Length: 131
Image (tube, rainbow, N blue to C red):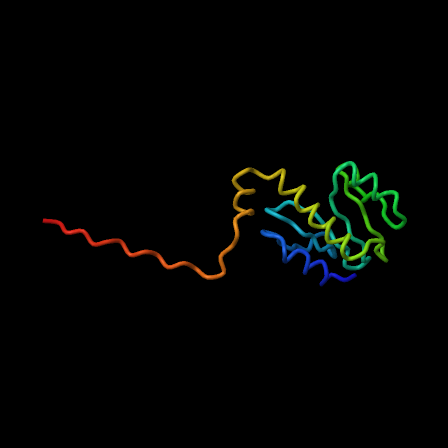
């Protein structure tokens, strides 16, 4: 699994940005909040999960609590990643949804609106006569 695969997953989610932090970590964020981190040098992937999923994932060989953020239910997938691309895509989007759920309602509404590829034309105001 590659960085480009993760970027493809991220491209399908509204409002996702990428930032390089701590030298060689590619962070996937929504509205400035991280939901996944890819270690460019090490090849590991960390992402946020809920408490139940966190416990279940830790039962899989190759998945460990993420250093520093395990108390927030982050897991670390060690390289080679023990999840199929389909499972990874599901967990990646679930991590995104966990973070979005904590954002202000106004931001959530903005993210849920479909984006328009083509700008709509403004309607011309009708001319009014002044006497």
